[in-house]
Image (cartoon, rainbow, N blue to C red; front, side, top):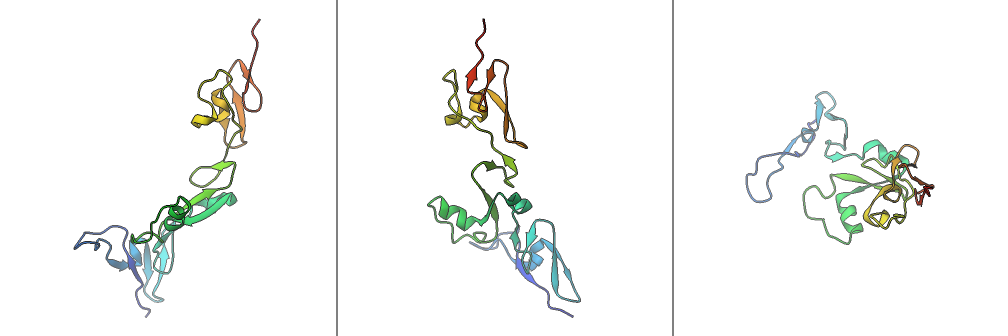
Length: 156
């Protein structure tokens, strides 16, 4: 029979300072095949002991999967000592995509034609429309038009 694979559990009871993640079978994120000693990881977990998360949908082929340590380094921060620095991951989306799995296609946006909150405040479609994230196209509110909803209809 195979040996049982153990990894740090994601949830545990603190027994001392920095001791809240005891080594448990398949990190409590999978089940152990007693004949082979290998872990069958639950969805969204990976590794020999199911000790790592995986990026959702492999970032939809529109981004890269980074560990928390890498994400922090990209933000000019340090996150190397915590137990999960190399265990949990997230997507860094390519330009033009967003969302936890990078599946949402961003819409064009610009300055609000009425000088309100446009793209500088994170508004899609210049603040004058709704983004269709599946197509990356703006659906402008009544009275506005353009690929970014950047023009106002002249009412006569």
